[in-house]
Image (cartoon, rainbow, N blue to C red):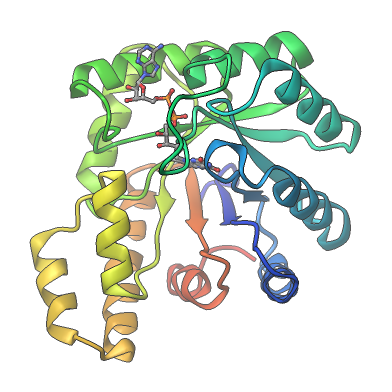
Length: 281
Ligand SMILES: Cc1cc2nc3c(=O)[nH]c(=O)nc-3n(C[C@H](O)[C@H](O)[C@H](O)COP(=O)(O)OP(=O)(O)OC[C@H]3O[C@@H](n4cnc5c(N)ncnc54)[C@H](O)[C@@H]3O)c2cc1C
């Protein structure tokens, strides 16, 4: 296995103090696996600004795993973005996930000055030079709001060429969509690593809802099997671990430059896959 591969876990900031303590316990457990980095999401339209900042600083400073804040531009002014970038830079944060983001449901117009993630990547480079390693989002199955697949590929290429260092994909359950996407963008001159985002399967109804919204297709054979398990959480877990582990194995064998786990603030589901794959610790 290549030494260059990178493994990371994503968290979301919690609403309560108890949730936050639980998140820190999970992070401590995941830290023993020596991931390359953690990341922490930025609530829709900047709604978790302070919680994301505090969680990132604590994960990075106390748990001592380099942590990348997600930052979205759809709800923040340039002045607000500049302030956050400076806070992160001064705190020694070196990696950032740059996104357009989505507006919270019910919120009408975007209040940000930057419209798309490629503009945010350019802004970060203008403001902070090469300080940050910039990650961007990739959609092997097409971003749900894109006009068409070709357009979305062209938009990704523009965003990558604006100064990104690597990309993390939306989750998917079809390895071929990932390989096809990477081949397409490489042909257009994008040579940054595109790391698959991996969503462990733990709960069918939540996964189905979420996948509908973000445009990730659950293959019929997986869906039908999960439906058949009904409320049998153990069977869902065992089947999910097997399906995702086998997909990850294929991805890595096919040259994927690492894996990024959507931990959902839980250690067990991601670690089961990590252990099945015998990833390095
Ligand atoms: C790894 C990962 C992490 C994420 N983390 C968060 C998070 O923390 N917080 C959050 O709110 N959301 C997060 N998201 C979701 C993301 O914000 C949404 O999918 C959002 O709708 C698009 O963000 P983007 O950065 O991919 O946007 P963009 O790359 O800007 O693309 C958005 C849409 O606009 C089109 N487009 C892009 N550029 C242009 C252009 N210049 N002109 C015209 N059309 C264009 C694209 O084809 C696409 O359809 C994450 C997604 C991923 C994959």
